[in-house]
Length: 488
Image (cartoon, rainbow, N blue to C red; front, side, top):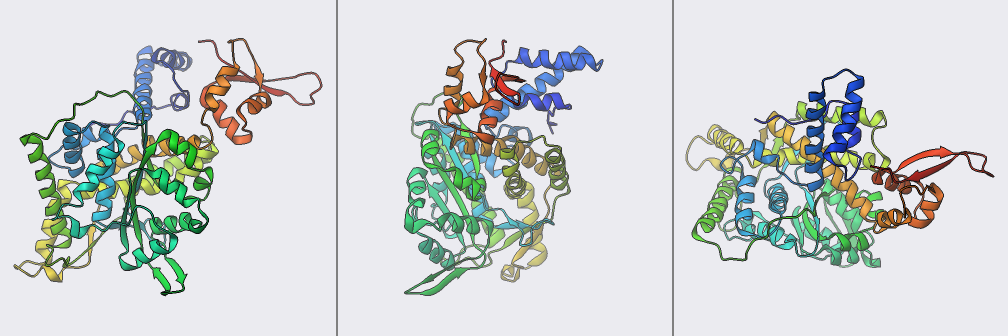
């Protein structure tokens, strides 16, 4: 097991907020700070490398940490990602994120932490953002295509790409678990802005949270679903997202629910080729392993009927609670911005959802279910009498991975997705305003240039890493904040 590299001082944590720094700059920062505390120079190098590696990982938005904990033989998600990497021209995290979300739909599970009355379910909502032509639809669509395999489809229930509040509620009333795939989310985002779809954001939020949804209709009277479970995969380009997603979607809480995969790094291109025998066998093996787990948990489908659909009930994880408490302590000390704090509660939930789905995808869980089935149905054909709930726990090593990904990837990407709704072109406008390193501009001048004010402007200026100080100017009763590009 590989231990996680975590910075051990506040300076290291502060450096995570400085964009586009080089390793040398980071090292110098550590070196100066650590010399004052009489720590050896080697420690400065070690800490600088740890933070640099962590920042690069966060910026890329990958699931590379999975490689340190899981193999293709002991984890379904890793198995699918390995197949996708060998066959498709797209970022590997598209395969990983899509399969995490699909498993959350196929294997309903819940955990009941102390702060949640109704429990947290493992259904997830993934939004993939990237440049045009980077393989978003290929990676996501391939994972969803698994659910349409003849042997898997009985366990899968999809909702149409576009729907109204009434059709969503009707669909959930007919089957509480629904999966929504939108391979170009712009159309759906535009649809939600129409007058007749005004209630969709609230309904989707409730459906995702497992809260009751209901509608009063003329033809059918009251239609409702008491415990819906909405899972979704959306993808679109970053530019389209910036133009069509609204800040109001985050303010209402709807767009804080998803986890975001944002990939813009350079990648090696692949030729489009037909699958060879090895790759065909890899896919067939994955589907066979997935089907085996579905039959272990829900039973074999007989004439289109699932004999004993079960909900997996996970015990609360001490590791997850400790991690959450640490983040809350940091929040109380004012370490996070308002935007980061607004996304924080959803990160707690996402860590639990991810931990549940990583556990379900593990070979350990498969063996555990086999053992439980033997206890409940020791004789052939007696499996019909099993309980509709399957109790289980989350191993600490899986909880550790889930917390790391939730904090380093989900949280940061959620903030990036929010900022994209109001900062498109803003960074460039501000930097262009500084035509020389000696030029200094007041905060109000920068606000006029960027057409933003208040907390938004403060966030943008902080992201750019500009130096600033308060200065007294003639005619002003109070000192004014002035900013300039630092000399590096």
